[in-house]
Image (tube, rainbow, N blue to C red; front, top):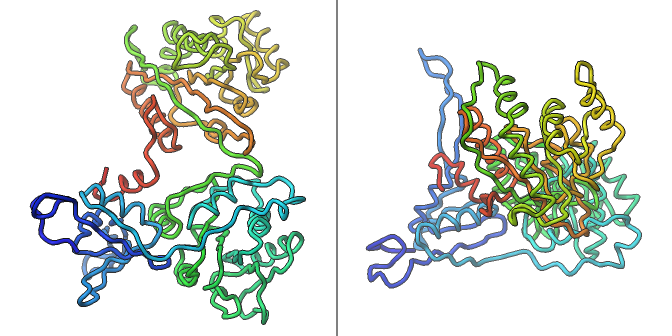
Length: 499
């Protein structure tokens, strides 16, 4: 443990930083508390109800450390934390000026995936296999079309020497998964309630509590996969999983799930901060890089008390904005600005509605138009109505540059685009844009997303900030600056706001 210091991060002679030894102990880490004062930054928020005489029922907001502080006599006091928080603990200690040394136990290494065993298994999710091989624990974000049984079968086939447990919260999920795995693998057993075979196979499918059956030999399992990462943090489940002494732990979570703050904290403690996104089998999310163009000047924008009026005057019918949006789009295909795109890039402009699309089309006459099939041209000038009718039959191919409305964005192959110019002025990120899927083995350069940092009106500034925050939340770099890492976002969300 460190002694008194003349300055943070140095000993009394100021010669070198204090050293903190983090000791791994299965699914916990132990940190000497005397030198771990910065770890108070890990404290989270917990709400509890209290019945007070004469004052009724109240909700109290407390802060608490996500671990247990133990006095181990001559060895000193140690803070035992969930192993998933190791990277956050290291970040806090290093910011506090400490040098960190990590020791203790780690899972045994896994071999390269067995290509021979994987033959005939259909499309292989290789990013999953590499993720499991390269990490002790992690969270796998899965799309709605992902089959958990297929994922578990791939892991079992790729690592034929590893024993695997798949955990579900409900007996019906265990039975369904066991039946699906039995069609793809040999030596699969299921355990639930009092039902446990005398000999449990290499692949065990179990409820959380049934993992404790002696025949499961959880302490010898090499890989444990939880079908629902949040459910795996429950009291019974986490109690059982902590007996998987030598196992790598992985949890599945739907890519549209947003756990509550306390659920997110517990999930991070069990599975850590490393994540893999699997939007579909054989696919991976495409990377996106954001480039912003500052928008200042021009006539004052007046909302007139209506958001629709503000959008119409600031975007849909504003000649200055449309001129700059068209210039950004032309830069994309001509390579006019090196930070936007190379010459000949496949580009599209995103607008909110048909009204704006037609206004922008007047400045980009050679560009196609992709609109929702329910859009109609009633009341439009003949030329505009004709162009809208033609858009219905032009398809959403990106072989030629296109102007795309929000309603039709899902029809466009965003994986084939090089540049997308956002001229819609929205608050966040459209769902179709937030999950662009490309083949897991296909080379694909990041999509270049051009956006406007609009400073002309308070509401437009708020929307620009909202889009930037949404990009950071998805892990997209903006203007060359990397997005905050999951660990940085976790620490920034603590009550003390460690940044």
